Length: 494
Image (cartoon, rainbow, N blue to C red; front, side, top):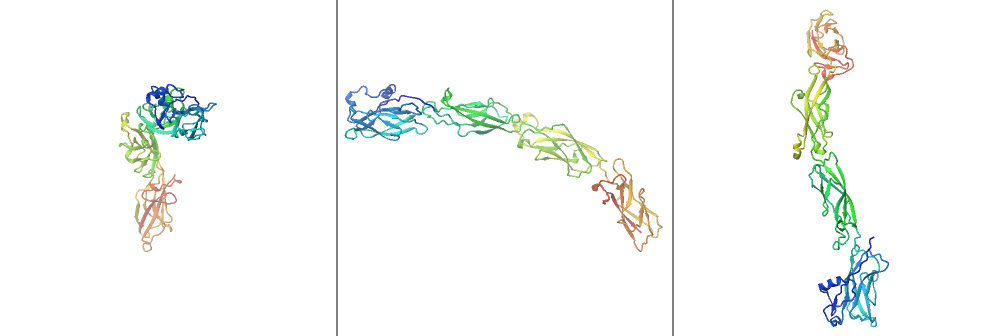
Protein backbone atom coordinates (compact mmCIF):
# COMPACT_ATOMS: atom_id res chain seq x y z
CA UNK A 1 0.00 0.00 0.00
CA UNK A 2 1.44 3.35 -1.01
CA UNK A 3 0.89 6.35 1.27
CA UNK A 4 1.43 10.04 0.87
CA UNK A 5 0.47 13.22 2.75
CA UNK A 6 -0.50 16.38 0.99
CA UNK A 7 -1.81 19.86 1.70
CA UNK A 8 -5.05 20.70 -0.06
CA UNK A 9 -5.27 23.73 -2.29
CA UNK A 10 -7.69 26.32 -0.92
CA UNK A 11 -9.82 27.82 -3.66
CA UNK A 12 -12.46 30.14 -2.40
CA UNK A 13 -15.65 31.11 -4.17
CA UNK A 14 -18.25 33.66 -3.25
CA UNK A 15 -22.01 33.29 -3.05
CA UNK A 16 -23.58 36.54 -4.14
CA UNK A 17 -27.18 36.60 -3.05
CA UNK A 18 -27.17 32.84 -2.48
CA UNK A 19 -25.66 31.99 -5.90
CA UNK A 20 -22.26 30.32 -6.26
CA UNK A 21 -19.89 32.60 -8.20
CA UNK A 22 -16.59 31.05 -9.46
CA UNK A 23 -13.41 32.93 -8.78
CA UNK A 24 -11.71 34.64 -11.74
CA UNK A 25 -8.75 32.72 -13.24
CA UNK A 26 -6.10 35.14 -11.98
CA UNK A 27 -7.41 34.74 -8.45
CA UNK A 28 -7.44 30.94 -8.72
CA UNK A 29 -3.79 31.13 -9.78
CA UNK A 30 -3.03 33.31 -6.76
CA UNK A 31 -4.69 30.83 -4.43
CA UNK A 32 -2.92 27.90 -6.00
CA UNK A 33 0.36 29.38 -4.84
CA UNK A 34 -0.97 29.92 -1.30
CA UNK A 35 -2.26 26.51 -0.18
CA UNK A 36 -2.38 27.43 3.51
CA UNK A 37 -4.75 30.39 3.12
CA UNK A 38 -8.06 29.72 4.95
CA UNK A 39 -9.96 33.01 4.49
CA UNK A 40 -10.24 34.83 1.22
CA UNK A 41 -10.13 38.63 0.99
CA UNK A 42 -10.85 39.59 -2.57
CA UNK A 43 -8.06 41.91 -3.74
CA UNK A 44 -8.92 45.30 -5.12
CA UNK A 45 -12.41 45.39 -3.64
CA UNK A 46 -13.69 47.28 -0.58
CA UNK A 47 -14.32 45.04 2.37
CA UNK A 48 -18.06 45.88 2.37
CA UNK A 49 -18.40 43.94 -0.91
CA UNK A 50 -17.41 40.84 1.03
CA UNK A 51 -20.10 41.31 3.66
CA UNK A 52 -23.20 40.36 1.73
CA UNK A 53 -26.36 39.11 3.37
CA UNK A 54 -25.61 35.44 2.58
CA UNK A 55 -22.54 33.83 1.20
CA UNK A 56 -20.34 30.71 1.39
CA UNK A 57 -16.62 30.66 1.06
CA UNK A 58 -14.76 27.33 0.78
CA UNK A 59 -11.88 25.73 -0.99
CA UNK A 60 -12.03 23.26 -3.87
CA UNK A 61 -11.70 19.98 -2.04
CA UNK A 62 -9.25 17.18 -2.71
CA UNK A 63 -8.37 14.27 -0.48
CA UNK A 64 -5.36 12.05 -0.95
CA UNK A 65 -6.10 8.35 -1.48
CA UNK A 66 -4.49 5.62 0.59
CA UNK A 67 -3.73 8.04 3.47
CA UNK A 68 -2.28 6.08 6.39
CA UNK A 69 -1.51 8.83 8.90
CA UNK A 70 -2.32 8.49 12.58
CA UNK A 71 -4.67 11.50 12.55
CA UNK A 72 -7.73 12.08 10.34
CA UNK A 73 -6.76 13.64 7.04
CA UNK A 74 -7.60 17.32 6.74
CA UNK A 75 -9.73 17.98 3.66
CA UNK A 76 -10.71 21.65 3.79
CA UNK A 77 -12.77 24.30 5.53
CA UNK A 78 -16.30 25.62 5.11
CA UNK A 79 -16.90 29.24 6.08
CA UNK A 80 -19.83 31.60 5.82
CA UNK A 81 -19.32 35.35 5.72
CA UNK A 82 -22.08 35.54 8.32
CA UNK A 83 -19.86 33.72 10.76
CA UNK A 84 -18.28 36.43 12.99
CA UNK A 85 -16.36 33.90 15.04
CA UNK A 86 -18.74 34.32 18.00
CA UNK A 87 -19.82 30.67 18.07
CA UNK A 88 -23.34 31.44 16.79
CA UNK A 89 -23.01 29.44 13.53
CA UNK A 90 -23.21 25.67 13.24
CA UNK A 91 -21.96 23.84 10.16
CA UNK A 92 -23.64 20.63 8.99
CA UNK A 93 -22.64 18.07 6.38
CA UNK A 94 -24.85 15.59 4.56
CA UNK A 95 -24.76 13.43 1.47
CA UNK A 96 -22.29 10.89 0.10
CA UNK A 97 -20.06 9.62 2.92
CA UNK A 98 -21.11 12.22 5.49
CA UNK A 99 -20.47 10.86 8.97
CA UNK A 100 -18.92 7.60 7.74
CA UNK A 101 -16.13 8.90 5.54
CA UNK A 102 -16.09 12.62 6.22
CA UNK A 103 -16.74 14.60 9.39
CA UNK A 104 -17.10 18.34 9.93
CA UNK A 105 -16.29 20.45 12.97
CA UNK A 106 -19.63 22.11 13.64
CA UNK A 107 -17.96 25.23 14.97
CA UNK A 108 -14.98 25.80 12.68
CA UNK A 109 -16.28 24.13 9.49
CA UNK A 110 -13.12 22.02 9.17
CA UNK A 111 -13.68 18.81 7.18
CA UNK A 112 -11.64 15.67 7.79
CA UNK A 113 -11.56 12.22 6.20
CA UNK A 114 -11.74 9.61 8.92
CA UNK A 115 -10.72 6.56 6.87
CA UNK A 116 -8.39 5.73 4.02
CA UNK A 117 -9.90 6.15 0.55
CA UNK A 118 -9.26 4.38 -2.74
CA UNK A 119 -9.72 6.44 -5.89
CA UNK A 120 -10.04 3.30 -8.01
CA UNK A 121 -12.93 2.22 -5.81
CA UNK A 122 -14.67 5.62 -5.73
CA UNK A 123 -13.16 8.71 -7.41
CA UNK A 124 -15.32 11.45 -5.85
CA UNK A 125 -17.99 12.14 -3.25
CA UNK A 126 -20.92 14.54 -3.59
CA UNK A 127 -21.92 16.27 -0.37
CA UNK A 128 -24.14 19.12 0.80
CA UNK A 129 -23.21 21.82 3.34
CA UNK A 130 -25.28 24.27 5.35
CA UNK A 131 -24.75 26.94 7.99
CA UNK A 132 -27.50 27.26 10.64
CA UNK A 133 -28.07 29.54 13.60
CA UNK A 134 -26.98 27.57 16.65
CA UNK A 135 -29.85 28.98 18.77
CA UNK A 136 -32.78 29.10 16.36
CA UNK A 137 -31.66 26.07 14.30
CA UNK A 138 -32.69 28.03 11.23
CA UNK A 139 -30.53 28.00 8.10
CA UNK A 140 -28.37 31.04 7.59
CA UNK A 141 -27.56 29.98 4.03
CA UNK A 142 -29.30 27.78 1.49
CA UNK A 143 -27.97 24.25 1.37
CA UNK A 144 -25.20 24.01 -1.22
CA UNK A 145 -23.67 21.00 -2.98
CA UNK A 146 -19.98 20.41 -3.50
CA UNK A 147 -17.65 17.60 -4.49
CA UNK A 148 -14.67 16.09 -2.76
CA UNK A 149 -12.35 14.46 -5.28
CA UNK A 150 -10.03 11.63 -4.29
CA UNK A 151 -6.59 12.59 -5.49
CA UNK A 152 -4.72 9.77 -7.19
CA UNK A 153 -1.39 8.33 -6.15
CA UNK A 154 0.50 5.68 -8.06
CA UNK A 155 -0.76 2.62 -6.20
CA UNK A 156 -1.72 0.36 -9.12
CA UNK A 157 0.69 -1.49 -11.36
CA UNK A 158 -0.18 -1.99 -15.04
CA UNK A 159 -1.97 -5.26 -15.76
CA UNK A 160 -2.22 -7.30 -18.94
CA UNK A 161 -5.84 -8.39 -18.77
CA UNK A 162 -5.60 -10.59 -21.88
CA UNK A 163 -2.29 -12.28 -21.07
CA UNK A 164 -0.60 -14.62 -21.46
CA UNK A 165 -0.65 -14.18 -25.22
CA UNK A 166 -0.22 -16.65 -28.07
CA UNK A 167 0.95 -15.41 -31.46
CA UNK A 168 2.54 -16.65 -34.65
CA UNK A 169 4.58 -15.21 -37.49
CA UNK A 170 5.86 -16.92 -40.66
CA UNK A 171 9.47 -18.03 -40.57
CA UNK A 172 11.96 -16.14 -42.75
CA UNK A 173 9.92 -12.92 -42.27
CA UNK A 174 11.76 -9.63 -42.81
CA UNK A 175 12.75 -7.37 -39.94
CA UNK A 176 9.76 -5.40 -38.69
CA UNK A 177 7.10 -8.00 -39.54
CA UNK A 178 4.03 -7.53 -37.34
CA UNK A 179 3.51 -10.20 -34.68
CA UNK A 180 1.03 -8.97 -32.06
CA UNK A 181 -0.10 -5.95 -30.06
CA UNK A 182 -0.27 -6.24 -26.28
CA UNK A 183 -2.11 -3.83 -24.01
CA UNK A 184 -1.70 -3.15 -20.31
CA UNK A 185 -4.31 -1.33 -18.23
CA UNK A 186 -3.42 0.91 -15.30
CA UNK A 187 -6.25 1.68 -12.87
CA UNK A 188 -4.66 4.95 -11.76
CA UNK A 189 -5.97 8.33 -12.95
CA UNK A 190 -4.84 8.95 -16.54
CA UNK A 191 -5.59 12.68 -16.21
CA UNK A 192 -3.35 13.22 -13.21
CA UNK A 193 0.41 12.98 -13.48
CA UNK A 194 2.14 9.97 -15.02
CA UNK A 195 0.66 7.31 -12.77
CA UNK A 196 -1.19 5.71 -15.66
CA UNK A 197 1.28 6.50 -18.47
CA UNK A 198 2.57 3.08 -19.49
CA UNK A 199 5.79 2.27 -21.34
CA UNK A 200 6.44 -1.21 -22.81
CA UNK A 201 9.74 -3.04 -22.95
CA UNK A 202 11.06 -6.56 -23.55
CA UNK A 203 12.73 -8.29 -20.62
CA UNK A 204 13.26 -11.61 -22.40
CA UNK A 205 13.10 -12.30 -26.13
CA UNK A 206 15.77 -10.11 -27.60
CA UNK A 207 17.35 -9.93 -30.12
CA UNK A 208 14.62 -11.84 -31.93
CA UNK A 209 11.75 -9.44 -31.28
CA UNK A 210 11.18 -5.76 -30.49
CA UNK A 211 8.26 -3.82 -29.03
CA UNK A 212 7.06 -0.27 -29.57
CA UNK A 213 7.29 1.37 -26.11
CA UNK A 214 4.13 3.41 -26.66
CA UNK A 215 1.80 1.15 -28.64
CA UNK A 216 2.86 -2.31 -27.42
CA UNK A 217 3.20 -3.63 -31.00
CA UNK A 218 5.62 -6.56 -31.18
CA UNK A 219 7.63 -7.05 -34.39
CA UNK A 220 10.42 -9.29 -35.61
CA UNK A 221 13.89 -7.89 -34.98
CA UNK A 222 16.06 -10.45 -36.82
CA UNK A 223 15.85 -11.48 -40.48
CA UNK A 224 15.53 -15.06 -41.72
CA UNK A 225 14.47 -16.73 -38.47
CA UNK A 226 14.26 -20.41 -39.39
CA UNK A 227 11.53 -22.66 -37.98
CA UNK A 228 13.65 -25.72 -38.64
CA UNK A 229 16.33 -24.26 -36.34
CA UNK A 230 13.98 -22.96 -33.61
CA UNK A 231 10.21 -22.98 -33.70
CA UNK A 232 9.02 -21.66 -30.31
CA UNK A 233 9.93 -18.40 -28.57
CA UNK A 234 8.78 -17.19 -25.16
CA UNK A 235 8.91 -13.41 -24.85
CA UNK A 236 8.59 -11.62 -21.50
CA UNK A 237 6.96 -8.17 -21.84
CA UNK A 238 6.99 -5.48 -19.15
CA UNK A 239 4.61 -2.55 -18.83
CA UNK A 240 5.85 0.17 -16.46
CA UNK A 241 3.93 3.26 -15.40
CA UNK A 242 5.28 6.73 -14.57
CA UNK A 243 6.45 6.82 -18.17
CA UNK A 244 8.99 4.12 -17.40
CA UNK A 245 10.83 6.28 -14.88
CA UNK A 246 12.57 5.01 -11.79
CA UNK A 247 10.05 4.26 -9.07
CA UNK A 248 7.24 3.36 -11.43
CA UNK A 249 5.22 0.21 -10.89
CA UNK A 250 5.47 -2.60 -13.41
CA UNK A 251 3.51 -5.61 -14.59
CA UNK A 252 4.63 -8.42 -16.91
CA UNK A 253 3.12 -10.93 -19.28
CA UNK A 254 4.29 -13.83 -21.39
CA UNK A 255 3.91 -13.95 -25.18
CA UNK A 256 4.39 -17.40 -26.72
CA UNK A 257 5.36 -16.93 -30.35
CA UNK A 258 5.47 -19.75 -32.91
CA UNK A 259 7.23 -19.54 -36.24
CA UNK A 260 4.86 -20.98 -38.81
CA UNK A 261 6.25 -22.99 -41.69
CA UNK A 262 6.91 -21.78 -45.22
CA UNK A 263 8.27 -23.92 -48.03
CA UNK A 264 11.89 -22.86 -47.81
CA UNK A 265 13.44 -26.35 -47.96
CA UNK A 266 13.52 -28.72 -50.95
CA UNK A 267 13.19 -32.50 -50.50
CA UNK A 268 16.50 -34.36 -50.32
CA UNK A 269 17.26 -38.06 -50.66
CA UNK A 270 19.44 -39.24 -47.74
CA UNK A 271 21.50 -41.36 -50.18
CA UNK A 272 22.14 -41.33 -53.90
CA UNK A 273 21.45 -45.01 -54.61
CA UNK A 274 18.71 -47.32 -53.34
CA UNK A 275 19.09 -51.09 -53.75
CA UNK A 276 16.00 -53.30 -53.90
CA UNK A 277 15.65 -57.06 -54.33
CA UNK A 278 12.48 -58.40 -55.96
CA UNK A 279 11.42 -62.01 -56.54
CA UNK A 280 10.64 -62.69 -60.18
CA UNK A 281 7.32 -64.16 -59.04
CA UNK A 282 6.04 -60.80 -57.71
CA UNK A 283 2.54 -60.12 -59.09
CA UNK A 284 1.78 -57.10 -61.24
CA UNK A 285 0.61 -54.12 -59.15
CA UNK A 286 2.37 -55.29 -56.01
CA UNK A 287 4.60 -52.94 -53.99
CA UNK A 288 8.18 -54.13 -54.35
CA UNK A 289 9.94 -51.45 -52.30
CA UNK A 290 9.93 -47.97 -50.74
CA UNK A 291 12.26 -45.02 -50.95
CA UNK A 292 12.03 -41.72 -49.14
CA UNK A 293 13.20 -38.16 -49.59
CA UNK A 294 13.41 -35.98 -46.47
CA UNK A 295 11.82 -32.52 -46.31
CA UNK A 296 12.25 -30.64 -42.99
CA UNK A 297 9.24 -28.43 -43.72
CA UNK A 298 5.83 -29.14 -42.22
CA UNK A 299 2.33 -29.94 -43.48
CA UNK A 300 1.60 -29.28 -47.13
CA UNK A 301 5.02 -27.66 -47.52
CA UNK A 302 6.54 -31.11 -46.96
CA UNK A 303 4.30 -32.96 -49.41
CA UNK A 304 6.41 -34.78 -52.01
CA UNK A 305 5.64 -36.08 -55.48
CA UNK A 306 7.78 -38.91 -56.89
CA UNK A 307 8.33 -39.62 -60.59
CA UNK A 308 10.41 -42.15 -62.49
CA UNK A 309 12.72 -40.33 -64.87
CA UNK A 310 12.13 -41.69 -68.40
CA UNK A 311 14.96 -43.95 -69.52
CA UNK A 312 16.28 -47.46 -69.54
CA UNK A 313 14.71 -49.82 -67.04
CA UNK A 314 11.91 -47.67 -65.72
CA UNK A 315 9.09 -48.79 -68.00
CA UNK A 316 8.45 -51.94 -65.94
CA UNK A 317 7.83 -49.95 -62.77
CA UNK A 318 5.64 -47.21 -61.35
CA UNK A 319 5.95 -45.04 -58.22
CA UNK A 320 3.28 -43.40 -56.07
CA UNK A 321 3.40 -41.32 -52.87
CA UNK A 322 2.21 -42.74 -49.56
CA UNK A 323 0.29 -39.73 -48.21
CA UNK A 324 0.78 -40.80 -44.60
CA UNK A 325 4.54 -41.34 -44.67
CA UNK A 326 5.51 -39.30 -47.77
CA UNK A 327 7.45 -42.32 -49.02
CA UNK A 328 7.70 -43.29 -52.67
CA UNK A 329 6.14 -46.73 -53.16
CA UNK A 330 7.57 -48.57 -56.18
CA UNK A 331 5.11 -50.92 -57.87
CA UNK A 332 5.45 -53.52 -60.58
CA UNK A 333 3.80 -52.72 -63.93
CA UNK A 334 4.92 -55.78 -65.92
CA UNK A 335 6.04 -59.31 -64.98
CA UNK A 336 9.67 -60.03 -64.19
CA UNK A 337 11.69 -62.97 -65.48
CA UNK A 338 15.02 -63.72 -63.90
CA UNK A 339 16.07 -65.84 -66.89
CA UNK A 340 15.42 -62.91 -69.24
CA UNK A 341 16.82 -59.98 -67.21
CA UNK A 342 18.38 -60.06 -63.79
CA UNK A 343 18.67 -56.33 -62.91
CA UNK A 344 17.13 -52.92 -63.64
CA UNK A 345 18.42 -49.41 -63.02
CA UNK A 346 16.45 -46.16 -63.23
CA UNK A 347 16.28 -42.71 -61.63
CA UNK A 348 13.54 -41.30 -59.38
CA UNK A 349 12.85 -37.59 -58.90
CA UNK A 350 11.29 -36.16 -55.72
CA UNK A 351 9.76 -32.67 -55.86
CA UNK A 352 7.52 -30.46 -53.72
CA UNK A 353 3.88 -30.10 -54.68
CA UNK A 354 3.42 -26.60 -53.21
CA UNK A 355 6.13 -24.13 -54.13
CA UNK A 356 6.77 -20.67 -52.68
CA UNK A 357 8.00 -18.23 -55.33
CA UNK A 358 9.93 -16.25 -52.69
CA UNK A 359 12.47 -19.04 -52.39
CA UNK A 360 12.94 -20.05 -56.03
CA UNK A 361 16.33 -18.37 -56.02
CA UNK A 362 17.52 -20.93 -53.46
CA UNK A 363 17.62 -23.54 -56.24
CA UNK A 364 15.40 -26.29 -57.65
CA UNK A 365 12.98 -27.74 -55.11
CA UNK A 366 13.62 -31.33 -56.21
CA UNK A 367 16.21 -34.07 -55.90
CA UNK A 368 17.12 -37.22 -57.84
CA UNK A 369 18.28 -40.67 -56.71
CA UNK A 370 19.14 -43.92 -58.52
CA UNK A 371 17.19 -47.11 -57.90
CA UNK A 372 18.82 -50.47 -58.63
CA UNK A 373 16.56 -53.52 -58.62
CA UNK A 374 17.92 -57.04 -58.51
CA UNK A 375 15.54 -59.75 -59.71
CA UNK A 376 15.65 -62.86 -57.54
CA UNK A 377 15.35 -66.27 -59.14
CA UNK A 378 12.37 -68.33 -58.06
CA UNK A 379 12.08 -72.12 -58.43
CA UNK A 380 9.59 -72.64 -61.26
CA UNK A 381 7.97 -75.88 -62.47
CA UNK A 382 8.92 -77.49 -65.78
CA UNK A 383 7.16 -76.21 -68.87
CA UNK A 384 5.75 -78.60 -71.50
CA UNK A 385 6.66 -77.94 -75.10
CA UNK A 386 2.98 -77.60 -75.97
CA UNK A 387 -0.24 -77.50 -74.01
CA UNK A 388 -1.95 -80.42 -75.74
CA UNK A 389 -0.61 -83.65 -77.22
CA UNK A 390 -2.68 -85.75 -79.65
CA UNK A 391 -1.64 -89.32 -80.52
CA UNK A 392 -3.16 -92.08 -82.65
CA UNK A 393 -2.88 -95.83 -82.06
CA UNK A 394 -4.41 -98.88 -83.73
CA UNK A 395 -6.67 -101.07 -81.73
CA UNK A 396 -5.27 -104.41 -80.64
CA UNK A 397 -1.78 -102.91 -80.72
CA UNK A 398 0.50 -105.11 -78.63
CA UNK A 399 1.02 -104.09 -75.05
CA UNK A 400 4.15 -102.01 -74.59
CA UNK A 401 3.97 -100.34 -77.97
CA UNK A 402 5.30 -96.76 -77.84
CA UNK A 403 2.65 -94.45 -79.29
CA UNK A 404 4.32 -91.03 -78.67
CA UNK A 405 6.29 -88.86 -76.28
CA UNK A 406 5.95 -85.62 -74.27
CA UNK A 407 8.68 -83.10 -73.44
CA UNK A 408 8.95 -80.70 -70.48
CA UNK A 409 11.89 -78.39 -69.68
CA UNK A 410 13.18 -76.65 -66.54
CA UNK A 411 13.75 -73.00 -67.56
CA UNK A 412 15.50 -71.96 -64.34
CA UNK A 413 19.22 -71.32 -64.23
CA UNK A 414 21.04 -74.59 -63.75
CA UNK A 415 18.24 -76.68 -65.25
CA UNK A 416 17.21 -79.68 -63.22
CA UNK A 417 16.30 -83.08 -64.60
CA UNK A 418 12.60 -83.71 -65.18
CA UNK A 419 10.59 -86.78 -64.29
CA UNK A 420 7.26 -87.71 -65.88
CA UNK A 421 4.21 -89.35 -64.32
CA UNK A 422 0.66 -90.23 -65.44
CA UNK A 423 -2.06 -88.86 -63.24
CA UNK A 424 -3.71 -92.01 -62.01
CA UNK A 425 -6.99 -90.18 -61.51
CA UNK A 426 -7.23 -89.55 -65.25
CA UNK A 427 -6.25 -93.14 -66.15
CA UNK A 428 -7.72 -95.27 -63.41
CA UNK A 429 -7.54 -98.50 -65.40
CA UNK A 430 -3.88 -97.89 -66.31
CA UNK A 431 -4.33 -98.23 -70.06
CA UNK A 432 -0.99 -96.47 -70.64
CA UNK A 433 2.45 -96.15 -69.10
CA UNK A 434 5.12 -93.45 -69.40
CA UNK A 435 8.87 -93.61 -69.19
CA UNK A 436 9.73 -91.34 -66.27
CA UNK A 437 12.99 -90.17 -67.82
CA UNK A 438 12.29 -90.04 -71.54
CA UNK A 439 8.62 -89.10 -71.49
CA UNK A 440 7.63 -91.85 -73.99
CA UNK A 441 4.07 -93.17 -73.68
CA UNK A 442 3.24 -96.86 -74.35
CA UNK A 443 0.15 -99.04 -74.17
CA UNK A 444 -0.32 -101.06 -71.05
CA UNK A 445 -3.37 -103.05 -72.25
CA UNK A 446 -4.98 -104.12 -75.52
CA UNK A 447 -7.21 -101.35 -76.75
CA UNK A 448 -10.63 -101.94 -78.33
CA UNK A 449 -11.96 -99.13 -80.51
CA UNK A 450 -15.52 -100.43 -80.30
CA UNK A 451 -15.29 -100.20 -76.50
CA UNK A 452 -13.49 -96.86 -76.22
CA UNK A 453 -12.55 -94.73 -79.19
CA UNK A 454 -10.65 -91.96 -77.32
CA UNK A 455 -8.67 -91.69 -74.09
CA UNK A 456 -7.95 -88.45 -72.24
CA UNK A 457 -5.41 -88.38 -69.47
CA UNK A 458 -2.87 -86.02 -67.91
CA UNK A 459 0.90 -86.18 -67.64
CA UNK A 460 2.78 -84.71 -64.72
CA UNK A 461 6.31 -83.28 -65.06
CA UNK A 462 8.32 -82.69 -61.92
CA UNK A 463 11.80 -81.39 -61.22
CA UNK A 464 13.92 -83.93 -59.50
CA UNK A 465 14.96 -81.33 -56.86
CA UNK A 466 11.59 -79.68 -56.32
CA UNK A 467 9.49 -81.00 -53.46
CA UNK A 468 8.56 -78.04 -51.26
CA UNK A 469 7.36 -74.98 -53.18
CA UNK A 470 4.15 -74.24 -55.02
CA UNK A 471 4.40 -71.84 -57.97
CA UNK A 472 0.94 -71.72 -59.47
CA UNK A 473 1.50 -68.60 -61.57
CA UNK A 474 4.44 -70.16 -63.40
CA UNK A 475 2.91 -73.41 -64.60
CA UNK A 476 2.67 -72.48 -68.29
CA UNK A 477 0.47 -74.52 -70.62
CA UNK A 478 -0.84 -76.66 -67.81
CA UNK A 479 -2.22 -76.64 -64.30
CA UNK A 480 -1.10 -77.45 -60.79
CA UNK A 481 -2.03 -80.44 -58.70
CA UNK A 482 -1.73 -80.87 -54.92
CA UNK A 483 1.50 -82.74 -55.63
CA UNK A 484 3.06 -79.38 -56.65
CA UNK A 485 3.91 -80.30 -60.22
CA UNK A 486 2.93 -79.04 -63.65
CA UNK A 487 0.44 -80.94 -65.66
CA UNK A 488 -0.11 -81.29 -69.37
CA UNK A 489 -3.27 -82.63 -71.03
CA UNK A 490 -3.03 -85.48 -73.53
CA UNK A 491 -5.57 -87.01 -75.90
CA UNK A 492 -5.11 -90.41 -77.50
CA UNK A 493 -7.45 -91.62 -80.20
CA UNK A 494 -7.70 -95.33 -80.95
